[in-house]
Length: 290
Image (cartoon, rainbow, N blue to C red):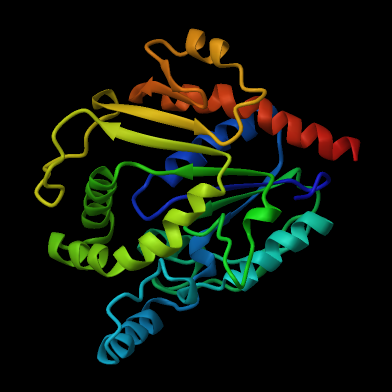
């Protein structure tokens, strides 16, 4: 952690909804006049699309059916840790962008499935914001969790997570249901061993729970809407959290445990605004005092 150069890390698996959380934080940063540097977990993949495909083939032929983007060794986690450390110490660092599609290719001038060049952060930022798969990893080789001042987990119940991923990958990336299903199966080992352990480290977790039938996510015709969901918000340390204020401001909410509040799904953005705006202010105010 760094009082002078704070880091916010949002972590969750593919299809979990971390991009939505990033959108909420972008609103907070704009409204409050906070200059944030944003980096994406995809920028720290070890392989571009062609190289990843070749590595998957190599691993499969060697009998390894568990290698995926979720795996530690498919990512430059040492590089990401160095970026976190450097930013905390100096306010500087570097990142790049992974180009997913033709629209991004036109924007960045790089073919889909490839990375842009590494580039340095602009000077004078108030904080660093990370969104991706591995923002709170703590294992024998790296400890990203200790460098982040605020860690947020986004964890839909798993059937909902799969539905969201299937619909996103089919609509935005042209994949078939069968192809996405194969990816989900391949990722399960790393999901259990690399993704889930991060949610022990996070300060706040958001878990969306549908209240409609999601028994077979692979045939679901649509994603359950926010109004068809509840969101469980769990605080690692509930001290200092004004639960009476939150439940009074968020209609239809209640406390399910001493450290957890349940809200209607459609109030998730409001809840994030209420919870994180003062936290962001506190981080930035402390950094300026230092």
